[in-house]
Amino acid sequence: MVVVALSITGVINRTRALLAGRKGIRFFQHIYNVRLQLQKGAVYSTTTTALFRIAPAVYLGGALLAFLFIPVADLEPMLSFHGDIILVAYLLALSRVAIILAALDTGSSFEGMGAAREALYGALVEPALMMGLATLALFCGYSSFADIFSMAQELDMNLTIVLLMVAYVFVVIMIIEAGRVPVDDPKTHLELTMIHEVMCLDYSGVDMAFIHIAGWLKNAIFAVIAANAIAVAVSFHWWFAVPMAIIITGVSIGVVESLRARNKLSRNITYILTIVAMSALVLLTGFLLIQNIEI
Image 1 (cartoon, rainbow, N blue to C red):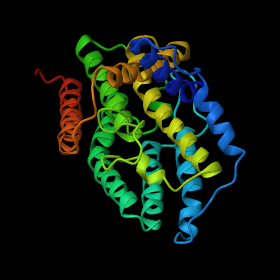
Image 2: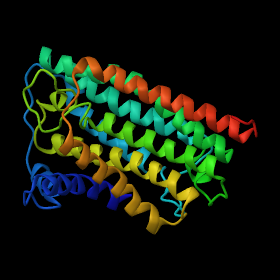
Image 3: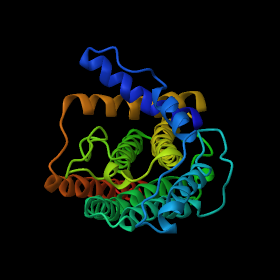
Image 4: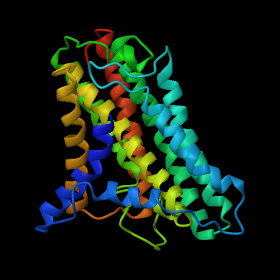
């Protein structure tokens, strides 16, 4: 999980540089940047309260705790109990609420716009997340990640295709949660179309490092879940799931960011709702196949 979390951003940067014909930055440049931020202090506005100061720790803590519940194929997670898929979803929601409230606490209308968009997109994408988790639980009959990904399964072609579609849903959810193209562009600064980046403009030093690290952990969560869904039907081993998680997210996001521009804000709603509809279709299709109902 740590390898996936630290590698995805580097793979994205290298893929974009390769497609653009540039040398690009170092593979682990993002880690060096965070190391420098961890060595610096933080500056706080006089208009902010204690909420603004504790939000990065809550943001990182929620992502870190959810991170510990995710297995990597045949490797067991550090924490597990029945029903933990619901807890993971709520921990990710807690992280989002913390950063939204921190952005509102600054009193800036600019950050308020980003917080409003983050809240809207988060509310729209959560049904897709829950239906994706429900599809995985439906296939295995368990409500714990450790039990869902506890063994390989003999699946026919139809069920394998459904699992591949579930993996695609989680990759798109990761793109939305991370604020990547086409929903948002992490390279933009001081633009009225920003979403995730604008909420962090008032943070610096160690607080900004916490936010970046939490983002890496969240990316790894969705990437490994997607890779596990593929590994269950293809090759249920950690040495298959880890590179798969890095490739299907890092390379795909790098290619998308190199070949297309960010959506208009008015199209983001349609984009997210399309993923919700797809996750609902995948859940329904999986249910019909499990019940041996011909489609």
